[in-house]
Amino acid sequence: MSKHKFYLTTPLYYVNDKPHLGTAYATINADVLSRYHRLFGHEVKFLTGTDEHGQKVQQTAVKNGREPQAHCDELSLVFKNAWTELEVQFDIFFRTTDSFHKKTVQSVLQELYDKGDIYSDTYEGWYAISEEIFYTEKDLVNGKSPNGNDVVNIKEKNYFFKMSKYQKQLIDHIEKNPNFIQPENRRNETLGFLRQPLGDLCISRPKTRLSWGIEIPFDHDYVTYVWFDALLNYAVAVGLKQQGREEEFKTWWQEAGAYHMIGKDILITHTVYWPTMLMAIGVNLPKMIFATGWLLNKDSEKMSKSRGSVMDPKEMIKLVGIEPLRYFLVREFRLGQDGPASHELIINRVNTDLANNIGNLLSRTTNLIDKFFSGKAPAGPNTKDASITHDTSTAALIELSTHTPQKVYECVQAFSLSEAIEHVMNLLTETNRYLEEKAPWKMAKTNLPEAGSTLYVALEVLRISASLLLPVMPNKMTSLLCTIGVCEFKAAKTANPNWHDIGTWGFIKPGTPIKKAEPLFPRAEGTP
Ligand code: ME8
Image (cartoon, rainbow, N blue to C red):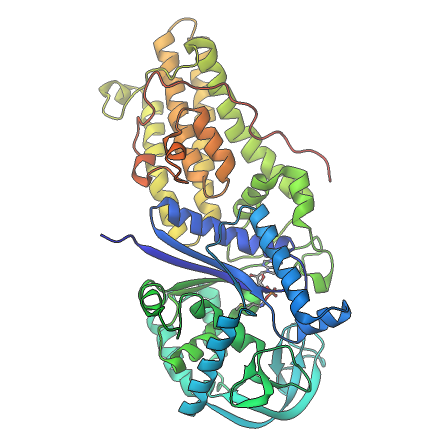
């Protein structure tokens, strides 16, 4: 049987600025989601990349005295390196200035023009450069865009995509597919937007005003609107309209279907522009568009360079390290909601969950095994062991441990990553409590097998928990697993243990060498 396929995308980031903690938040959450699917044994394609055309990027290049392409090459690499440093395991790093993308965008434009879905007309309206979005007079709020950004007046001939033609079909699709747009409030927001008559989409810019874009094949005086170009990347990346890639396109786009993780700021472009474009081309719509909330700065505003006060991921790495930062960004926030980030929150989270909870359990357990069992896993209870039915706290903990993988699986299916991790943390907290209650350090002096049995339970919990946290902290959890003798998957050069084995109680064989753990998560202190 072929493996289940999962195709996940992040937005393509504008190269007008380097990555900040907000874009790192979006990318790391998507990375963790895709790593969970790999852990489940699925075949994954994970795409991220850079959006390199448009006015915003052109202006930044001019301001820096650079040719746009040279500017894009440099910034795109900055993004790629930043994600690599943050252990983002992308399969595709997409750049909209790649020539195969430009060629495909042009062939889509030509096809829609030939079909009559693109026409020319005079455009008059207001343009917000920072958003690369057109607004009508009635959209403006106090002379600014609805998001509070500056707008400029524009009147010129342009090309339009007949988006209005697909309005009804789109509403039907959203109504028939409750999971198409998530979370629910974003689905309602889109349906609310679609209650008004949908206009057509201006998809060109005269070269006199903007030269940095993909030339329109049927009018060389124009380039394509940046969103038309950028949105297509998701399908172009897996073979849309490219000779020799038909099978790949069928497998990944038409059958598996894409999951787009985006920020709520780019909801309508993804839930209205993009699906209508796909309808016009005659291919399937994505499976799901999931809009995340924003990481807020200390003034409770969206963290974004244009608004000032962004946090730099590099500084945060200095403060707590790469994998604890990943942990914070996934654990601290509910994915669909906004939330504030600060040094204090990062330090507290890392100390409470990593140093005090998992770190503490690991060092206590391995130290005691070293001291009383010469560094070998003691024998422990198994699920069928009748005696454990008399020991309710052990039975309850085994039950909780073996059910946690399924809980994590269900949360990940719902994009509830923070809740998934919460289940693991809860298991670890319960186990630290269990050790307090059983006090194996005392018991070892009177009943060594009983103390061993307690420590074996802690070992198995550590194995299950570390396996379930691999997508968040791949290196630290791999080294934790090796410390407790679970190294086969690493030796076999696979990133993950077998999913089925994780929830199978009794995986660690008594006698397995257990190392005395080095502190995995030193306490974080102070400010950078
Ligand atoms: O919009 N909190 O690119 P962009 C959470 N190029 N997420 C944040 C964030 C924050 N404070 N700041 C940014 C564009 N993001 C287009 C997209 S897609 C074909 C084209 C994340 O560089 C969030 O996911 O402005 C948001 O949607 C994305 O960065 C926008 O990045």
